[in-house]
Image 1 (spheres, rainbow, N blue to C red):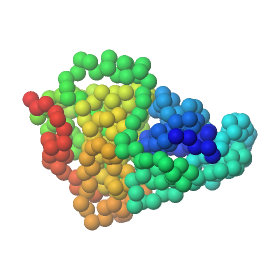
Image 2: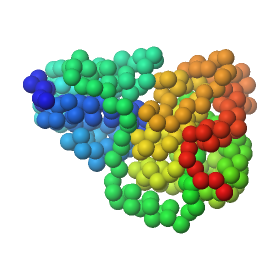
Image 3: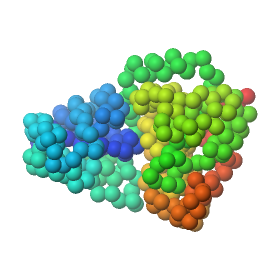
Image 4: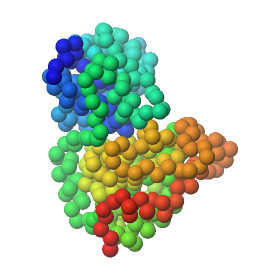
Length: 334
């Protein structure tokens, strides 16, 4: 099937990590319906390794997300894009700066993403493009292609550890958006309960900024701490070898689902129908009345600055998570 109007397009999403993962269904649907089309992707240098090996993307172009619109850097980047002679840009990062960059690049046709909280992000991105590509069909599974070297390195790292391999992605404590972080003491209790039943290996992941705060998790029996230790693509490769991922709403959660790792997402302030596990996994949603508030700042934390965790995340019970592990995962018990 061919598209006579558009033979070379640019997709733009500079971040966040989970959002870029959610766009993979869109360009895969376009490539499947129109195999002759050339798809380029503009994103950040951080995220580039996640999509550089993707067979459906011909070229990945990077940009500094903090660029200033009226600068020599921007004009140089616009000239780079202009030389590619794109027929269409699918702008999934519709900030003023990105719109300005597209204008300077001389790309005539543009589809602009509009956030709709009634839809999952994957579907929302898909609907942005359907006007230009009426024959596309929404993909039902996320998929990432990681470099073979990173996969090989991860297998080597993990080969001596007991299975099941369970990832605790406990980070995000210092995120600008509150109500997405599960308490450290509950992670500790959850780890103890899991090890009593499965006696596997718990892999701890998170960002460098979380490292000191999450250091108590080292107490979990048979835990391996990768928090802040690995480049993003190597961390993803470690996740790809896991039997289970447990995480709040975050990039690694969506990476895990795209790597076909069974995932359990813990949700408080964020709407799970919007950013929950897509295609595989389970979303555990707090039942607190204000959920999902979808606010950056929790009103309960603002009223009590000494508190770290939003009540909606504190409310999620350990037994609820364990029950989902028992019912949803095929893990070998002791």
